[in-house]
Image (cartoon, rainbow, N blue to C red; front, side):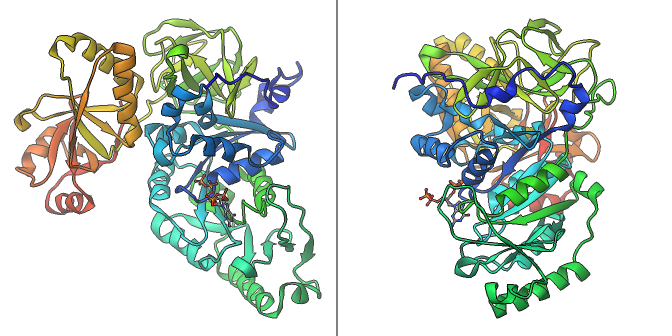
Amino acid sequence: KAPQKRRRSPICATAASPPATTSIKQEVTRRRNLAIISHPDAGKSTLTEKLLLYGGAIQQAGAVRSRRAQRGVVSDSMAMEQERGISITSAVMTFEYEGKRINITDCPGHADFSEDTYRTLAAVDNAIMLVDAAKGLEPQTRKLFEICRMRSLPTFTFVNKMDRPAMNPFEIADQIEREFDLLTYPVVWPIGDGDQFRGLFERSSRLVHLFERGQRGKKAVSSTLPLDDPSLKQVIGDALHAQLLEDVEILDTMGNQWHYESVLQGDLSPMFFGSAMSNFGVELFLRSFLEMGRCPPAKDSSVGLVAPDGESFTGQVFKLQANMDARHRDRLAFVRIFSGVFEKGMKVNNSRHGRSVALTRPQGLFAAERYTVDTAFAGDVIGLNNPGVFAIGDTVYTGSKLAFPGIPSFSPELFAYLKNPNPSAYKNFRKGLNQLLEEGAVQLLRAREDEGNEDPILAAVGQLQFEVVQRRLKDEYNVESGLEPLPYSLARWVVGPSDPWKAVDECGRLFGVFCAKDRWERPVLLFKNEWGLNNVLADHDIELKPWAFA
Ligand code: G4P
């Protein structure tokens, strides 16, 4: 397929340099960034698309999902071979709404699930947890929420598909509170579900927003009635009216109190309901999010807190992407900006190797299209051409030297020995593998000496990562490789109680558990399932963690 023609994206108009009078502080406070965490099919593409529609960033609903449909089940990176640039869809989407600038950093799922999905959550300031109203919490949402919890990310809940038969909304809130130990605060409350879905009650204004089944894709225009309006009973029906009054009383008298500090600390989730497909509840959510969402905060570093409106530019690489199309073998490093002003062509230092790099061709990303960024601020994400100078977790800065804490390695779920069938290609094999490890494309473990196999073990959170490694070894280093899968699905780093290796030795022989070490020679135990993990925790004095910092 021919490479896509580059058009200026609609967002370019808003990405221009700010007027000279705009202070860094003003720019920072009007920024909100977010990632949507959900299980496949909950409606993430649909919701993203509707949000972009409000921002005028796309003209027509269907744009995001039709791109996704073009890709079918083919993963982003693989599709890149066929269609240059399409995977850029999964990076970041930016739009402006009512004076605010919103960056949606995509958390790839489905076949694209990889460590990048987790790393994205290290680069955003807010998470939107999208829940299918009929299904409640699902496995991928659980995994992703763990990272939100670890980062104390403000998490907003959007319960989608209310136009379909749904679980009781109290039950959904209860599930979130019990399973995630996360309090909920419904900002809106649904009236009925499925065919009986009549609208949303907005608690702050005491207004009922009536649901009218409209045309898919259009911006919804809904009428409102005050809760105490005498005609409401007739409009929504006696039974739903009585139910609504009862629900509102329960929420007001027994529900959680609103406490904004708890939202910012990730302990209280503002909760919304709606139907992304019918574009109902989306604008209510967007407006509240802009009000309540966290704007770029100060960031911890080796020299203390870095203020987002500080003069010096700082940022961190959280994702690397290699284009696998042989004709356009460029690489992009995605940098989340934490402070200062980014300007095209500026020189920055990389804290890992101390070299200085001129950022001459910075790219902004909008869906499948790239545009050149002239200026960017804390909270923005830019794509930099990466001729091998950036790795995951690198800090880039101007001014005095500093480094942000590294981005952790997350518990892999797939493990396989990587075999080199051609010993004469050993040098290239090692070189390629080292490069891919440096980039963070995959994790590498080795069996502990007594397991008796010295082949490297690739460890990944998604199958795609293995495919990328094998293909890049072939395309870029001209080496073949083979995979020999291992039957484990969980990894835990040993962190205590005292010296980790001593703790492992004291456990003696662990049945059905594989003992490995990571690149930093730290012990990592591989388990077949949760049951195996829980047995070890119950029987031994050992402390385990599902992630580790470099
Ligand atoms: P994902 O990115 O989270 O995987 O989900 P996506 O938006 O692709 O939505 C998955 C399916 O759920 C789609 O149906 C979509 O239309 C539907 N959907 C999303 N939001 C809503 C909603 O609010 N109500 C209802 N009833 N359905 C919703 P599909 O059959 O896979 O595609 P299509 O035939 O609708 O295009």
